Length: 453
Image 1: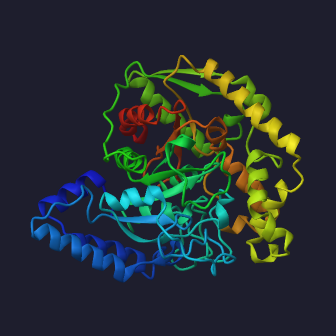
Image 2 (image 1 turned 180 degrees about the vertical axis):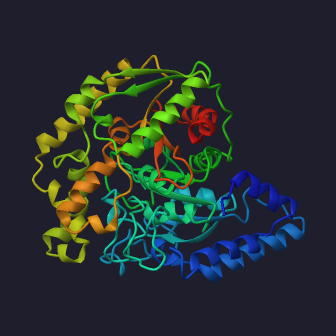
Image 3 (image 1 turned 30 degrees about the vertical axis):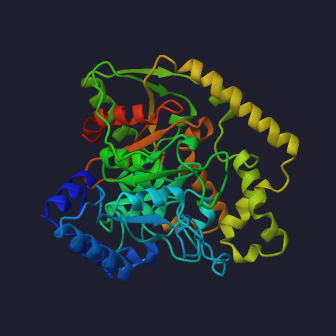
């Protein structure tokens, strides 16, 4: 079932649909023995969600005033703090940590708007991979070529917000929130055929969200439509849940950053993306090829020595140096070691270089409304192709090659599905200007139907 937040809010407010019935629909999808719920969720709040839904229905029958989205289920990535709940961030090493004392601010805002948290979703341990696999809690699979009779046969859901994306694609919830450091909302969204948004890093408060890299982390929404993401973005940033009015596509100035971001595209990705570009052009968008010389020279994705690697290692240093690396997912322990030997001088230079690149790219793209490119150059990798750490590392680098550019530039980015129904999932990314997230959402609202085809 594909949900729209605007439609659901209207149905709940008019009484044509009840909160308890909606929660039961979502729980049935999660609990389906032939579905992905057991791999997409780490914890499901069956009783709590039902009780909260009953309270909403009762209040509505009494005519009491309720928040705009009261009764709509929400799934949350396992790195958001909830009062009284242990934040494990997809790990086992934190399972005995003290429960959180309060909700993360972005979660508190969504609860205040009426959303009912239905459960905590699976993720790459500590959010440090774009594949979405998890050695502790299982591997959530994207809908494409999923074998219902063999849980080891299928394709990754993308990471790190894997379970969150599947919870949307499989109708387990109408809304979800994740985090994005190198593509962690957009890669899963693209691989699962939904919409995902990475905001400007400072747009969302980060308190109560288990970090990977404080310089790059950004909490963001995933949902079925651009409109749904716009509503969630508004609430998470402290707004009232506004949608965003669409720009006109005619005359929209889009830039294709040709170069390594377009190298070695999967043929299906290339053809699906090209078809979307043709549709946008036919609708009146002005699309031009450009080259971003600084990005071509730097290629800032999945470098062993990086700001993310340095900050991630610092965060986990005490565990790793205490000999607890064997309690981590082997892939994550391996990746964390990449930040061990980065010198302070190297870290400072990387920070300064990043700022210089920001300025140079801003000058180069000033005449355009957005950049446009394939969200991932590849289809979601088959689980069978991830036999060892080297294979996972190679596939991870490929999956996040195009998404990482937005994090490095700290530009808001949204991915919209563009593939034909029944074919491999492909996303188109629109990259906006720093701090102009709502303008990007207006551009996306105008382009969505055309991109989808």
